[in-house]
Length: 191
Image (cartoon, rainbow, N blue to C red; front, side, top):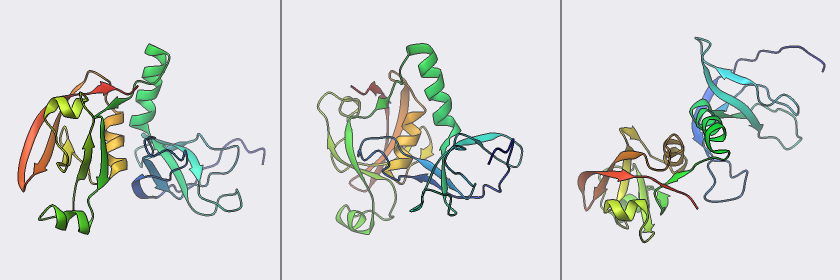
């Protein structure tokens, strides 16, 4: 529309949305859902809080027509900040991983594992010699937090891990057989 600036409300209705835009189960998707008006040609704008601090970069819409219909999605600023730093330092993004496959804890999983609450992310397999394996994590352990940040969905866990670099040491809180545990873990690079 040849406008120099536009401001919309940008009310946040959800965090850690996984839209499967890239169609890969391992891709990092943890969008902030908002009602900021985003159309072709104006994505990339700032999503700011009431204090004017950047919290996200508007980047996608959910629309059958290709035009804004009330839902848009922003990349969290903490992820964007790390991507920029990695590109400057390494020329590519450094992605820290646990080397596990995971699933969200729903009512069925909680019942199967005798969990008192529906929370956390369940490890379904552990790669040999990966970061989780080296830290002693096992199949059916339920990760509840990373460095104190609670995780209750696959996208939340991926977003938290995206803030760290390979070689960083984090503390994983998890449940095993009804007991709470914590273990230090050194993140490895995805290959």
